[in-house]
Length: 105
Picture 1: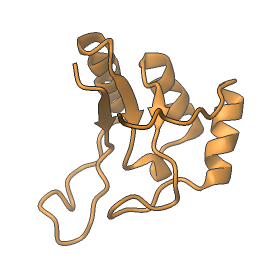
Picture 2: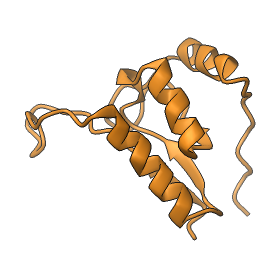
Picture 3: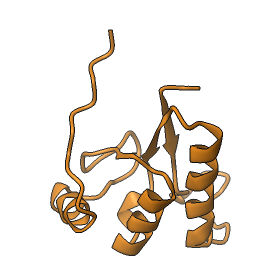
């Protein structure tokens, strides 16, 4: 299994091939997380791009479905991300805490 599996929610960016497609149903993301957890039980399943548009409830459902990590920082490579304060609030509500990722060997 891979060490880390990033799960992205589509962020529609003008000029890209998927711009303008219908939004995915939120439960499709939850199902994707659950499938990743079942197929790769030894991997860290990370919520990545698209989190800025996710509700606190959707974050919670994804963690309950098997997500075990989030990418932090207000900017990913090409899209905005949740703010540090939003992430702290969500993690606090989930009774979770930040743990630094181990450094690669």
